[in-house]
Image 1 (tube, helix red, strand yellow):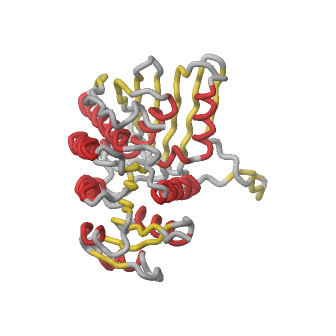
Image 2: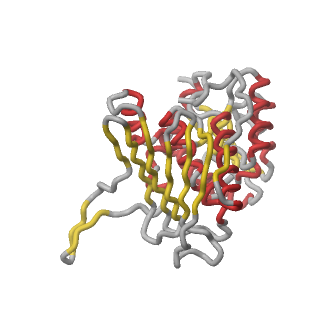
Image 3: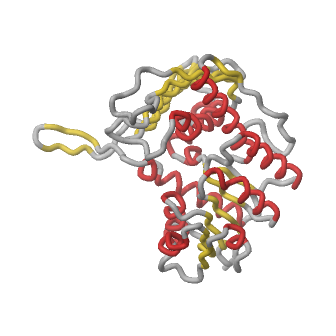
Length: 341
């Protein structure tokens, strides 16, 4: 039996700790070989009970640790570019949480560096592509039975926003998932974005423009709208409806266990993305491990991470300055498909 894939996990916060748990207890064929976080106490806590793991304050020290053959980046976004380039320099396959790199200039540097290598090393963590409902919707659209897609209607709601969450982050953090999902579902690049701001909710922190309504245009004439509401107060909800020439399909409806008590009936609404997309995260990481062990890289790549950063930046400009903002992508290196599938 082949040795399990030794993974260095960079970042031991909320997302990183969950991935450490997943690699150790859920995913087959992998083990946590090293954990890096500037807060070594947090890293030690996340890695507690795992045999053979080393803990580091420095990310590059973790990459060079014994037994490391791949990297999972779950550190804050601004640290991603340096970590990706360090992994590329060592020839290490990478699963990088979104955003790949928050700014488009840095994201383009990652794309260009990988393109010079002549082979893909990075998979980007747009986990919705691994969600069963999203995969079913993708299959329906690709199968053609619904006809040509005309519109996507999307909803993205959170119970509350964390401290320090800004109006721009509704676009470049929350809606970045819809950006990738729309590109993937439709097989088209997004060419323009308009962000509209209704009156802020009374539940939003002072100064936060929440909710927002985001409208994307695509290269072949489809429209994508997103209601993003990060302080809705009642649950975490993600929905998407594709409206096509011969029919429509909708995902994200709550159809869980129905609880009846006190004269009322209802279903539980997830309160967190790690609950709603738990299976998708498991499938994503397992697919990455399986592909890496087979010497392949699959799933969303660096070009997808770059495209999401460019579209998000255009959305932030629309939010701040008003009006429609065109999306301008750099020439696509031959290494990448137009839209990864």
